[in-house]
Length: 396
Image 1 (tube, rainbow, N blue to C red):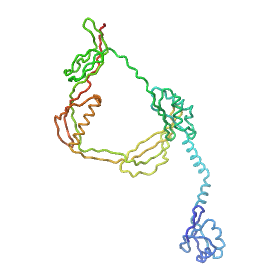
Image 2: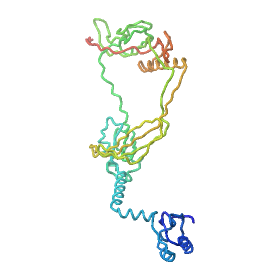
Image 3: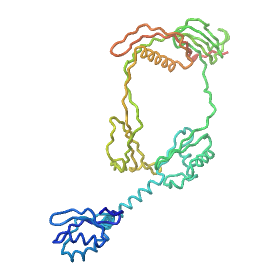
Image 4: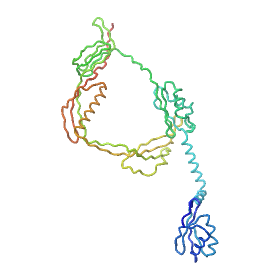
């Protein structure tokens, strides 16, 4: 016979029947309408399974056939519940721990503020408390994030935008402070001098007296715009202002490999969560090893805090992310082009994005040991002025 439906929920037993009329006993069971299955010969008798509800109906059939039975297995939910009831205190502890863990995960344990420079974090946290956001608050009692951030923006002066991000039991309040009018620093009287050897291409004196002209060759330290107005008899010191550009030559030694190696994330990852108690970490989720050939693991700590005190209890998450190693081979021309682009990017980073590369000349080039080597001379038009304070100010 087939196993009846829901047998695991109803419970069933495995019996071994012995005696002189085992076949007669099995026929009598079938005639009585009792469902049995997995009937197999076992030693001097037979092994079979039947539902727990039908177990006590076998006694008169056993007496009639002179057979005896022995229970060899108990299966299903009723027997599991019975074993659990015998350990009711352990079961109650497990349930209590689960309920406590669920309640602890439903509270706000830490609040952090990011992006604030002028406004104190304590003032932002105090404003959030008035709106119902504070530590040990139930998460389900928090206001809608859009409504909460709008009210915080209205109640915090000097703030143009407030955002909120909740991760587990931690809340991060992100603040963008309103722009303040720039306070111009007080400037002392000064000259504008050349910071390097160059040929002047353009000079504009907003304040002060220009000393050099266009196409003039200057050396490092030469005065470009003087902060002294007047002559030897009547003079006045001012703050020299203006812009001076010139042609400057930069020599770069460039080495670019022909083969590049790198790595990238595939997007696959395995997370492991731990309950941290002091120096111990108890793993709760994410058991088992990953199947990644190469991976990187990032660890995030989320300790519980009480006011400004960090408690030795919290959560730790390990994110194991799959990594794919990549390699690429390029031609000498491609490596040469990349090296020149790197040098140009360095020029713009060092001397300002308004600089202009007028010409470039490769002085030497060779390919050796899997790399392309070059010596390149760049002619760049850039700002060449820098400040020089006037120590001995001359009066009017």
